Image (tube, rainbow, N blue to C red):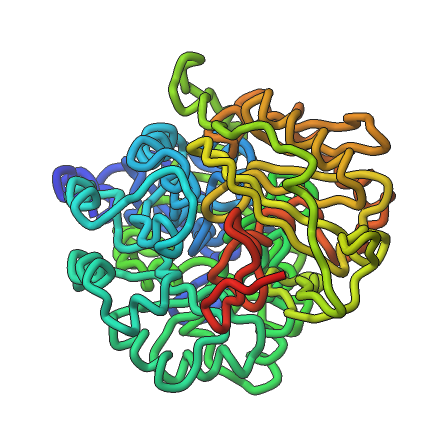
Length: 568
C-alpha cells in the first residue's frame, strides 16, 4: 500500500472525491472467495481504492459483458531463454496478460557474472510490469562445469538491499545442498527467511527431506502427479511448468482434477519458452487455457496464475488479487474459458500497446562473449565398441533416457544416421579447446546439423547432426558471428538467428528473430526432427548435467543419476 499518499487514496475510497479511474460493470474474478461478481473497480494513483458500483471516476471504462482478472504472474522464468531482450519479452508477454515476472537470471550470470545480472535488472527497470529477480544459486550449475563466470555468496550480498531481489534462485546442485557443502550452505544462510526456489527433478525419499530441510520452498521440475504429491506432502509449492520443451502441465493438472487436490499449493511458470511459442500460443494465458481444457475450474486456474504465486514470493499484499490496497494490475477478458485477452493494465494504465526500447550499447562487452578455438575434424571422432552409451530424447520433456546400443560404425568410429545423431559440446568461454562428443537417439536430423550457443546452463557451443562436415561448418559460423542458432544442410548455411548479447539474446527486433526462428524450426522438422521434439530448446538442454539421465559437456558424457562422467 502507498502510505505516502494514503490520505488521497482514502478520500477516493470513501467516495469523498472521484477516483481517477473506474472500470465499470465487469465480471470481477475474486480469487479469495472463488466468486465472479458483476461490479466496478475504482483506481487512484495506480492503486485499487474500492470495489463497488457506487464509485465515480474522472475516467470510466465500460466492461459490461467482460471479465476482469488480476494481472497474471509467471512464477519462474529465464528471460534469456526467449532469445529477445528482456524488454521485448515484456512487450510480447504483457499482451498475453502477464504483468509480473519472477526472474532467475542464471543464464546471463553463467556467461557474464554480475554484469549479466545487472543487465537484466537495468533492462527491466522501466518496463510497464513488475520484474523481480531471484539471485542465481548455482553458477556454475555443478563445480566442474566450464562456464564463463562464478557467482558466489560474497557477490550476492550487494544485491540483498535491492527491493526487486526477492530470494535465492533455483538450487540445482542438490548434492551440495543435501550434503550441506559449505559454499552452498553459505548461500542458503544468506537468504534465510526469504523464498528459495527448487530444481529437483526426481529427487525423493531422504534426500528430498534434506533438500526441504534446507529451506527450499518450491519446485518447477515435476513431470508426474506422483512426484508432485511427494513434494506437496513435504510442504513444497509446485510451479506447474509449460515451456517450449518441458510441457508438464497436462499430466499434473489432470492429476489435480481427478484426485480433487486443493490447488492452493500450485501456480504456473514458463521457465524456458522461446519468443516464437509465446507469439503463437501465448504465455501464462496459455497455461490457464490448457488447465481449463484439462478440466480445471476457470477461477482455480486464474488463482494459480495470480494470488498463489504472489503468496509464494511474499507479494500477496500488493499483487495477485483485485482488492483495496492492491496494485491496479488487471487483465480484461472477452471470454473467460477461452482466456481471450483484450486489454491489460499495469498500475492503472493500459499497457497493451507497450513498445520496447532495448538500450545495450553496441560496444558493450556483453556482445563479445564467444571465445573458442577452431574445432578440428578429429575432435568430432567418436570411438565405439560392441555397445556405447546413448542419450535418448524423450518427446515433450527435457529429461533424457540413458541407453546403450550398438552404434553404426566404420573403422571403429561412430557414423551417425537417421536413428543415431552425433552431438558435440565445445567450450566457448576461455579458449580451452575442450570438446565433448557422443550419440543421441530420437532427434532424427538428416542431411545436416543444427548448432547453438544457448546450452543450459554453462552456455557452451552445442551442435547435433548426421555428418561431421555440416557440424564443423555450423560450429565455425557461430564462432565467427559471436553466437546464436544456425541450421546447415548439405554444406549450406540455411538459417541463422544471431544472438550477439552474451550468445543468448538478440536486439534485432522481435519480428526479425521470429521470422528466421520459425523458418529454422519448420526446416528442422522437414529434416527429420520429430513432432513433440522442439529442436532448438531440446538442443539447449542436452548439456545440462543436473537433469536426468544422460547429458554431455565439453568434458564428455555425464551420468546425472550416478553423478559421474562415463567413457565412450
